[in-house]
Amino acid sequence: MSTLPNCPECRSELTYEDGNRYVCPECAHEWSKLTTANPDEQRIVRDAHGNVLQDGDTVTVIKDLKVKGSSSVVKVGTKVKNIRLAEGDHDIDCKIDGIGAMGLKSEFVKKV
Image (cartoon, rainbow, N blue to C red; front, side, top):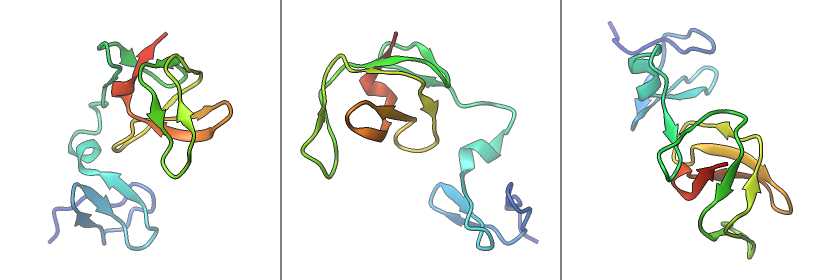
């Protein structure tokens, strides 16, 4: 029998591995192997200075960041309010005035 975990969304037993993620073919839900390994242990996201970030925090961008697919740039010192922590490569989901919804890497921000 399979040792893979059931899907946390639909409880399907048909999950499969795809790189460092699990995928459910029935509901198309994807989740990280890291969160499945020990669900009681939460992932800690830190800013460029080592401060722990949480949902709802306000951060400041510490480096000019080019916006992929656009000629826009997020300038140094841009304040981003009410962040949401996310799984994956870009650990912060947010909205930036004048640009819109974005994903940021925690290494390019500082907690205010």
